[in-house]
Image 1 (cartoon, rainbow, N blue to C red):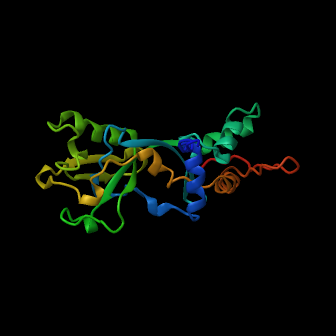
Image 2: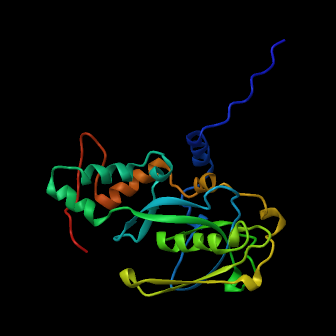
Length: 237
């Protein structure tokens, strides 16, 4: 009698499709954008994996809505397709439209937040969330690992510690200050001790392909229909 063949592990894209079916529309609760003032975080343990994920983010100035492009994880994204088509078009007007709304690189770091900024009250009910940050801020947090005597620094599930991030200023004048809180070093709650996989968790952030189609139309004024294409005039903001 033949043995059943070993179950084939799903590919990354197959996992993404499964996640797509599970998630409801709208996913802003899965990530946190650092705002003015103080933000206190405790980084999650990710083992030997890269602790963060690099993402491409669009921003619609007219609607003040963000979109994290699925293309960041190697998945189809109509918004990115529309952007690339406009950027590489021989039409100067198309290029101008693309220049107004280019995707920005962001870094998403898995963290636990604190209730009301209280270093003694981890928000365990909400659980781990991605915190979106700039490349510079992400690099600085990574430096803590290199400078810390422990193997994983602030990411260590047993001896890690909170980090306070202070944001001041606006746009190009925005400045970030980080203050490690080693005084409050200690173990994570037992259920969060195991290493997490940021790549798999990042699948919770991305919108469905259909949502990227709608976003492309609202951002660039482009409908992807062979019989009816339209685009809005480029206007500087």
